Image 1 (cartoon, helix red, strand yellow):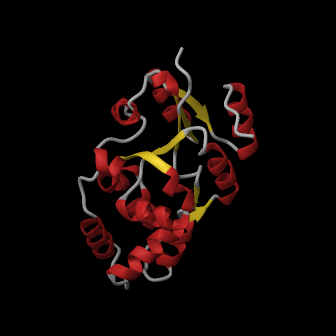
Image 2 (cartoon, helix red, strand yellow):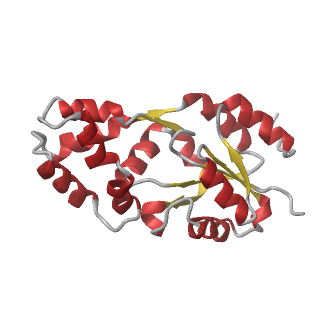
Length: 203
């Protein structure tokens, strides 16, 4: 069994909290559409998949949604409102920094280009990451096993030497099926306990 060398984090609901209702409410105040309609138009899996797999550009997405909802927003204001869904999960930062001297760190996330840019700005620990497997860049999304194979290749180690942390159970199960040691994130304290159980020490 190989020694664990890499600790890989999901982004949304792990390193940054996500609340899409913030953007939905801001936009519903600028249009006659209901919150439910706006949520479906912007944040349904069918609408997010193209921008999170790189098959649709951010400009194309922005123009489509603004036209469909008849939004009284220019492209810059739309983007700014879209990014309000993210709030850095600061309690995680100390743990990430503590792991950095002993392990190679990275991320594997379903995300879009503007969200990644905002996370890089607001989540400073991303500067510590080596492998960065982002769905909009690699063209596949969790729980598709292809994205985990991309992660293993980027880490350049055996799958069992990688620990992956995600808040979504199907993603955890799919990663585990590729041989990666996958942990379900529910809280910082539970994650610390789970890492200790794997023999990962940072103190």
